[in-house]
Length: 319
Image (tube, rainbow, N blue to C red; front, side):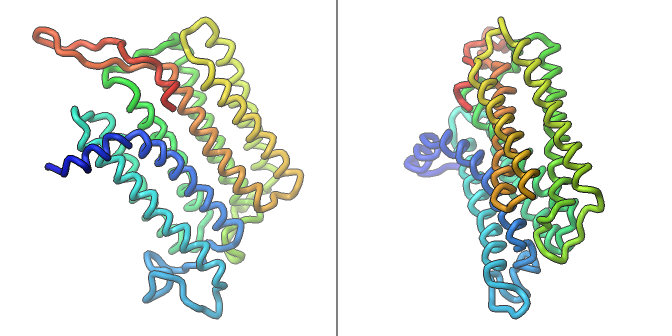
């Protein structure tokens, strides 16, 4: 498969910019999704893939306000933008020389994720915004944000096996911490599902006391923060950049404070969207710390075989 020289040069020159853009886009579309919810616009376009039967775009309707239609339609349209950016990442990885399999796979994850999210979004609409479908929609976005950070990092490191910069127990701690983060995000979707912002006034809510699920969410946050503090002490004396850790601590503390303000003020709409933005920031910062504790060297051909060397530097500066 060949392409004009100007195109391949363009793709290679801006490959890193495309990867950074897909991080922002994947996190950003989760924020716009929260705007759909807090404005009650989840069924502004009640069909899928069309907005209304026979029309891809909003139309005047006596039962659906124009604002709700355009808010929901705008969020759907942004999916196309995210897909376009992901496609640029794939093309840049494909035409790069030498072609790097790991970078290409991570780029394909982004493009495939956008397609999957379009389908999940359709299911969410067609099922009348069932709370668990909305939760899945959000959690997949956060997973794609994580892999987008790995894509950015991969562009600044080699393709050899990952070499830990910290002892095995600390690597295990990071794995457990990532699992706790997943549970924290899941609990956050339960809080939203049981709270006042359903996406549409007629949408059934999660039948659980919002105070209880909020407490579970807060407890998981404290657990995550406690593990983060422990990790900080354990990282001393190891050749790991401190900036990713400091950024993660700051983001987690800010997110926790925002959650408390939300609870005390009755979950105002604007803070819901800010909290979703904060959730994306926590995922980015956690993934950045993850890659900063590992390095990947390049494969070099030597004699009859291959070996890896650690010529690559820490990827912390690349995320």
